[in-house]
Picture (tube, rainbow, N blue to C red):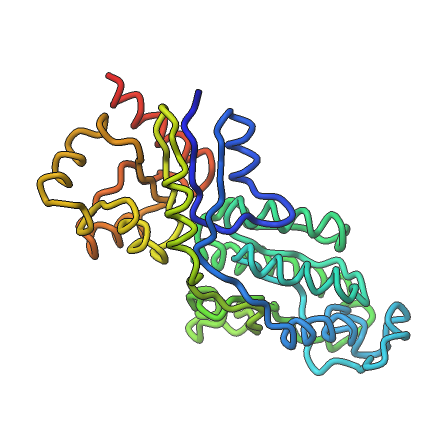
Length: 326
């Protein structure tokens, strides 16, 4: 029987790839939220109004969409957008929450750009339900930087196709619409910087507007909740703790009495050298969190996933346990 796994993250909604994968492979996954996410309802209302105003409708400059005449704030938009960017599952969830609460006043067909399989899965569920004619791109790009370079080619090609299709009816085609990027309060700026780089030819640059739709902070109850789960474990197969970000690392090590929080330096060294005597093992989703544990706490996790997905974590655990048993 596979060991139990504590996943130090919030379970994604409506489905979570880690829950689906580990449950299907005879693991017992348990989610212990580290971060608290709060949606910015006023900013999400602004996103809805963009849909209502026809900002995603290329014809809205000359006419109002008949789909949205019932919306009381319908206006011809001052800016137009040709697609949306999501690099966070929380941003997708915030967008979905807005739609579920208030509906979507228009249903455009637009490209949706994302990075990483987990966010892509969540976005696919939303797309299938609310934006059925839209397309999803970038799930395999792996990083925001790779996604940005992919968009420079893909989105510009889409716009060229659209412009050529309307060139016969207008001698002055409209300017290239930008992309709307739904983000959290804390984020990297690699995507806007890459797409709007002034060193690019003007024809290739893509305007990006960021709207903050959620904020994140460490949960006050995390350490207590994590300790309760650890103390309640009495299995024989060993427990794995999977860490997804630097947030919560200190509390995690303190509860497990690892790294600088070990009872004694000798006990810590012995546990590190002889993993067979331990009942709890630590895996990180990638090198950023691993390096944080190394550099700040002097702790070396047992596994660092080669790929930041359920399969990558599971493969790292499998290899580690095979080496331990040999």
